[in-house]
Image 1 (tube, rainbow, N blue to C red):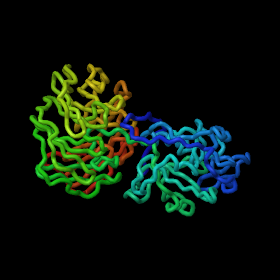
Image 2 (cartoon, helix red, strand yellow):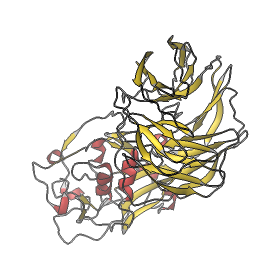
Image 3 (tube, helix red, strand yellow):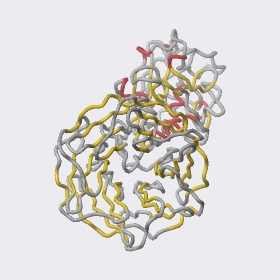
Image 4 (cartoon, rainbow, N blue to C red):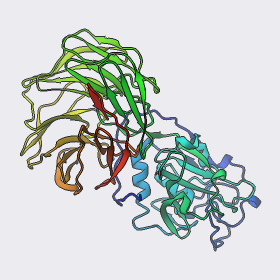
Length: 515
């Protein structure tokens, strides 16, 4: 299927940042002018530019990257990796040249970036200055082809003859099984394109010539509080927790794989069972919360380890029990919400510390109580959803602020109510799921916007309904989990598309199901 796109760019989320900074001096590149010739780094060489000082690969005669307006680089010209950027922002930036498509040119710039293939990648990655196919690899880390994720690039540079097919594209998502066909963004004659690799000319697009890279300053989008990404690949998985064992179906981006046993140990909580990344390794762990103690099984990426007691303190909320990163340290914490106060236990990576009182204010929603980062500051907040109003307590990192009204609009799902970042802007939104329609209120960072219908398709799970980023594009999707099948509707940033069957395998947990 071909996803639907919007031209509206979105701002960056504020996840925990793990990056490498690197600065490249263009003047140090030794590219012989004779090897550059007269064509651009694209699948088909365009006409020779009128200005003979311009090279087909976006460099001058000395191999220095041409900058805004065709400016010739000099010895002081520098290009470098830009600020940290999330995968969803890279895709959103790529889309801004797609609607309407930007004409291809080697000597024209748009917003400071050349409108050729390497200028397009430079723009999407928000680099400082323009790279070309001969030096883009300097701000990338080689990865395996099957590890490609949204915002990565596939690069072909032919140093002996750059005119002969040198090109670069932005990977979006797999078109079916991992390692097969895929969707890509590219800037090639005559304008910006979004298409599958298989739809391109096979005589000009030979996959064996292309090397996959990941931008050194890319960061993963913030995950939903209970996102069950147990293997850390950026895609939410399904976890079936039983009294004596736990099973997992991993998402490959287009479906859930076969069911595998991840633990044969008895593990269940008397108060609540959670999934979330407790130790900051980007893999979701399991939490069994009892009234007098709390136990954890950490994910190794291929299984769950042995249970360990992380707290022997009594901890249970009368209204709700949540899991989410409330202090912004990249580790999920526990929240016990009572009618008149709220307490937390913070993750110290291998144990919980506390409990600590974070609010002494009455706060409870009559329809639902959620946890999610609604203002995009990297800390999970509390949301109380009522039939006609919605209130929020923002996290300061050390406490919850006083309740604030975020919506006075009637908003309720007949089946269930979710929270998750459905448009990939780093802020958690509200979703009301009914039997035949699904409605969304997007967060603006200071309030929830008006209610909009995102789907008029019947969509409901007989066992459970989840929200999570199952395709790894930085936007949360809805998952309907039945006894023998599992379906998903995917976020296209301003609507849900589908549903699509993600599994026809019987999969159910007697204790809890996470997704």
